[in-house]
Length: 422
Image (cartoon, rainbow, N blue to C red):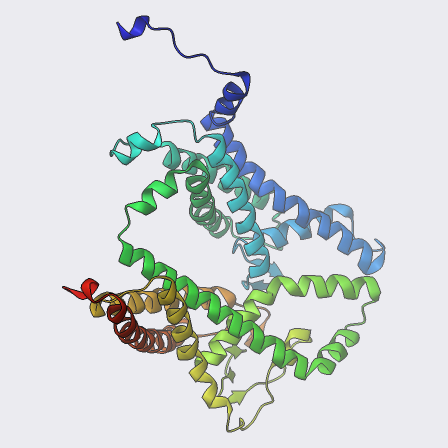
């Protein structure tokens, strides 16, 4: 009998709003992945053409070569590598990779919102009904982005440059699936449902790891800026020796920003203790600095002088535990905990996750940047992991124990009835 009832009427605004969230899933997700790739690619192509004009007013080369250079730069952000005058360059401009990731995130949010009306509603999902909307959209989104990347490799690659289509496609797939897929889940509202099913201790551990990583990146950036400011004249001198005019200097400085995240990762590895290499057989760390001839790159002015290090630099390794401890204090003030074992698990898991995250960043920051000894540039992933686990773990657990003692002392004193069973 219910089928004979007249359905409630809806206004035109409600119908339009419903249709806006029920756009064709296959078409929307696939075009979303293609659009995310095209957005950053077009910018790189434009920068390539602008740089071609700024360097020599177009006197040498052709527009197609400038476009190819921009495309190769975009592919380098996807770990394709490129051969320059017969030398393989594998170092990745992580700044450009972050721009691509941000574009994937924003596009994923829009795609998720556009298809949020598909599948079961939030109540049925909460009851355990299977929902394949996000996995299917993520698969199509990733396919569109990865296929676009392979197409760019085919069009921009030459026998001289030889970018790797396999590495580029794999990176594009991982990046779009992880970042874009997360954006789709958040935009569609599914992520809020899934997160509510995660245990509170796990969410707190992830929040702790996030606070530690963000704090450590801030400390590393401040250290890098301070080191560069102390020898800013050397950086300016290196830039002047490159022989660029005003336009070329501006372009060169802007492109330098693309490797700023790499430099921050190097700075963080230095502060943790293991340091990094700027060529085979070299080391830059708080306890030893051994460098040889270096390329003319302004950011290298931040490197300390070779030889014996000052007596205070080994104490810089204390910044790691202090940063982790401060992060735990801030998180535990927002999310108090009175059980000792829960506090330790939260802090330890957060410290381990933060160490893994920073180690991954440090491992991606290095690579070959030239021939000969410059094939080995960057931190040692294993050494960074060992030092990060030690520094972040010790700092996090110590702060968690202190904060738990303090919160038990204060909160249980204020509400003695709440302490039963703790």
